[in-house]
Length: 115
Ligand code: AMP
Image (cartoon, rainbow, N blue to C red; front, side, top):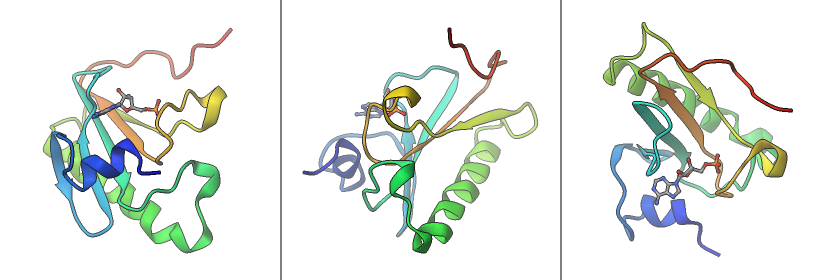
């Protein structure tokens, strides 16, 4: 089944795409939780962090360099930001196509809140 993010990557449905190359696409989150909230997504649909294969190491590294460059472009490199990957139910994952959230632009508060 095609994931929502595959449809954005293929430009079948709208997305505010900030970066796209042969491995990774980055677009603004539709419900931003911070002034800057960008999703960095591998073009191939890896469902969760559990499904990252050894052969994906370079791809995952590329997600980080894209995040670094976007943070620079968005002007949040020096003030700081957070990169988040949610996995499965307890991680709060909603879309089962691996993605890193790049969030920043304001103080983000404590890293976690859980009971
Ligand atoms: P997660 O909970 O880590 O799976 O995050 C999924 C994220 O996808 C949420 O922050 C949603 O707001 C975001 N999202 C859902 N649909 C879209 C969409 N069509 N375009 C951009 N972001 C989306």
